[in-house]
Length: 131
Image (tube, rainbow, N blue to C red; front, side):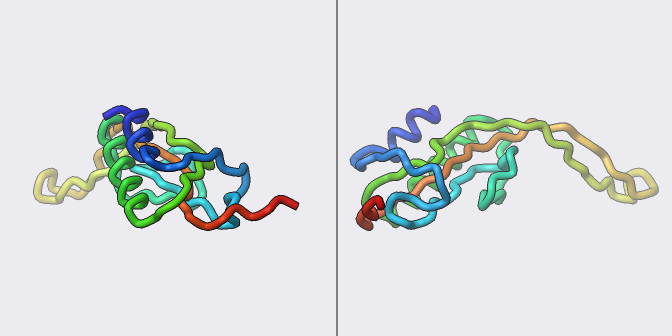
């Protein structure tokens, strides 16, 4: 599944609106950060509960989280930040057991880690009138 297909699946059957460029949506509610994998930009509120070692995995995890969120919310989809794929190189440290080398040592490995970051809200609350 591509990111475009994952987004289309989330948007299917919903009214979709570009959100306000602020912490609060047009309804006055805060957006949520929906992230798969490790967010490379240190986004506020982003959850880093899984490491994705491929673009495809990051998209699949984001899609599963997005659909789970959508299944518990009805109404309009407000995009504050449409999903984007990010990649970053991370160094991982592994502890080599004493039994192998005779002493405990650390080994370092470079890995590319992938994530999808978005901010959105699905709400059936009315839009707050502009002042």
